[in-house]
Image (cartoon, rainbow, N blue to C red; front, side, top):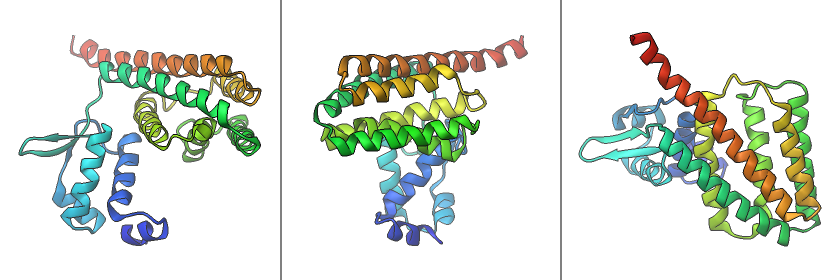
Length: 234
């Protein structure tokens, strides 16, 4: 099935399907930080015209996955400690605010969706599913989305999803081989339980610490990776 057929099947525009495909390739490292995005090559790969391709790249540029260079086209956005710190801080602020709103407005259906999503994630972790597997990534993302889904703020949910994707890019680049941490498993459960019990202060505190701890671990891995070439050169 080509991209146009896939977009139609999923009820997406062609530019949205292109953006989703490129975003995934950037997040999983298939398209490396800083690499040139050549329009002719992308046109051939996707079998599309320039119009939807440029629209998709403009969208990814606005989201922070791609940078546009004057007269020189597009590149995958570079990675940096400063950007990681910014993304982590913003994600903690936005996601905890959204969670507080969701707890205030969520109904029984929301509670059930959170419980079901947590069960699916915990089930994958119990069988030692690799942290970089597609199934685990989908389950992990779904839980974080379900927790805040009842906030009834579409713009907030959209911004939160973008920050989650940007954060995941760093996590998948630097923590792909990291084994599951029992503390992380516990955190997911504790966040969900506190949310369902309508303890907003506790749920938001655990979520904030969860996001910040992940950011700290990624930052350590990033700095270690940057230091390795310097040691080899010395």
